[in-house]
Length: 437
Ligand code: ASP
Image 1: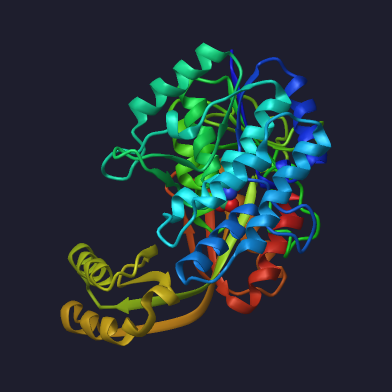
Image 2: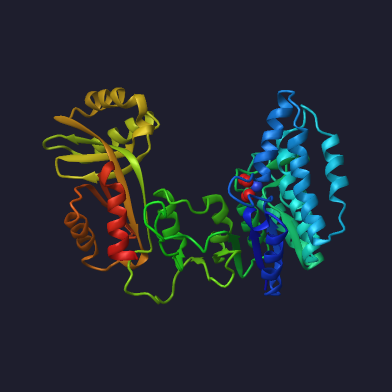
């Protein structure tokens, strides 16, 4: 069985972090594939190598010298090599690379070198084979990952070498050029590697002990979520929780491979395990898995006596679509319905959109209410449990929070309430302390 471990930038920021990575990898012989980010920040105020590389590219483009930034990057590699007593001549390799730089150097070729050099050092330190992502992660002509080719190449490299390190974040295009993924893309590389070898688990090692139940800027020391389903994760991400990007979850989710978020600085902590289904519940008393939310929504309510709901609603949805304002929620009444959209997405178009609704839907009245925040309580354990929404609403009401809209997903995985922006943080705290903490 294989375990794929992806280490984020802070986990490989310097030689001390490399040592932690080594003891994690050596603690389990199944941890045979390692995917690494570029060295990140070592302390507050430090810089991620990827950010410095993007900065270099901007300098090169405008013909501004960037030698000092390049030497700063080179010094990071050089220090790690010296402090860990590695043999790879990273100084010469880096100098060589820098010598070839010009205003025409493609940005991807430059910024991908953070992962490349960090992984080169890590591979030697772990005693694993270095496999360049340009040789095992492939883009298709449409810019998507060529899954078949990538799967085969990663599997072959893993079988050939047994234990490998792959740099995250980039791959190769059909024309043979290096291309980077979106920022944070090493997570995607890790998921691709885990899918390729049908890993037992995809471990994503970072600097927090898993996904937190609520935003720590709002709730003091929220607990990490021990177990969450992919469905719940999607709900939380949609509602604004900063969790893994959809693209980095899909390859493992499709195959039902569990994803474990772990903390390199606290390896004994089990972190968060993301799975397709949770068989048995070990914490039956907590029915909320996590809480997330976003501010600044607008509610448009359309009233029309004796309305034929379907055609009017369809027209309204088409109008929103025409204005590129995704409708986040719909609540229905007999003679009215409300559509909730982000205020920013409606933007300047709000007045034209309302005009269009007047013209085509011919309502008796339209009201617009902005300054609304949506707060979601997400939890698989809410499914089919009577009385849950009542308890949530009562708790919010007792704290003086006026609920403007209510939406419960048809799968009962989340209950979403609309409250005034000013009640946003209180609502999250009330839900956390009352039902999750
Ligand atoms: N180093 C890249 C970034 O900072 C990719 C990654 O870390 O996943 O976005």
